[in-house]
Length: 294
Image 1: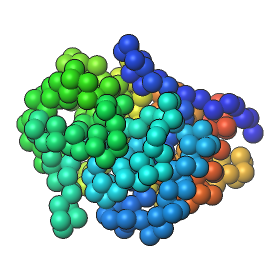
Image 2: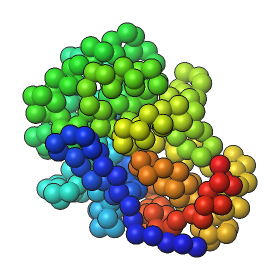
Image 3: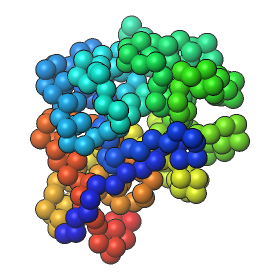
């Protein structure tokens, strides 16, 4: 087994204010209650996980004001504020939870502004480091107007870097002509790389990865483990045994080795799993093993 020093990726590489994010980062979505709703079952442990992640070198933490809703933002603030100078908090706007725990479109220009202001308040920031505009299936034809609103808030100093989430190749191509896109969050994992059909599906990362790599724009995968584990991934299990790690770790290893522009954000509610996921950054796959995994 080859090990290597932990790597990093640049967010906003072509801007005057690039940010360096260590790989992997940490996604907070699973820190909420069941159904991504309400407070975690063990709030002290959730706070401990956030602090431990930073202690272990994580400097990119992913959140959204609609996780909980508001729960992960409050946890981050309680655990980590005042923030370290190199900590990058990436959040998302474009959705809102209903009282029935539904996921609803909230991506009109005025709605995005409301969400950005809410994130600023909840995270106790004067400017958000990175905000992904999350496209929802029921969003209608407001993409360009809404993205322009994001760029307007960037000019106003509310947002440092603008990102996208759940976008098709065509939408990404349009966005790249409109302004600078710092990062993209799409569905991507070993067993689910392309767009997932269905009402709760997501836009895949495979269809846009080449565009992102050409422009040195990070792909931040979501559901990278949820769509991979427990699906008869024989090759992953075989490689996990070879490298003496768990299948979950091998999924993270694969993402890190798949492209230097992928920033995995595996989430967990377990301190031991957190440490395992972060140790995956030290593993360098042999070229033949990466080719075998495909």
